[in-house]
Structures are given as C-alpha cells and as structure tokens.
Length: 98
Image (cartoon, rainbow, N blue to C red; front, side, top):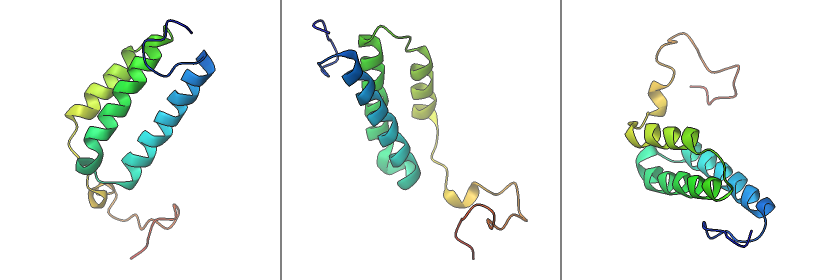
C-alpha cells in the first residue's frame, strides 16, 4: 500500500490489525472508565478507524454514524443501567452483589 493516506503504512493486514487494536481499545475504555473521562479519546479512536477504513477503500458510513451517536450521547451511570428491572439482583451475570 504505497499510497497509504492514514499513516499506518505497510500492507492491508497491518491496517486490519490496527483496526482490531482500535476496536479493542474502544471497548476497554468504554467499559472500564467513565464516559466523561474517555470521551475525547474514544472519539479520536473512532476518527482514526474511519481514516484507516477509508484508506483501505471501505465504506465508513456505519462507523461515522456510530461516532456521531457517541459524540451526542450523554454518559450512563452504572447504577442506572438496570433501573428498568428493579427485582434483578445481578446473580446470573457475575455482577457485584450487595
């Protein structure tokens, strides 16, 4: 890929490896840190993923939609995630019990 525009360089396998790394990092950040602490970093990672996908000639529409949705989403407090199920105690999912 001599005409690489995203800065990853190398062949397409390196680009796909970088996309997988970005996906893993986004997932790790979103589920281990608060939304306000990681929002700018996650947005940056989504932007890099869009750039790499575009460099590969792929369709970036879905990634752009996810990025836009993420940018506009308020953070969700962990304590409110299960509010619709007041009787649920978390026992079947390995969640910390109280």
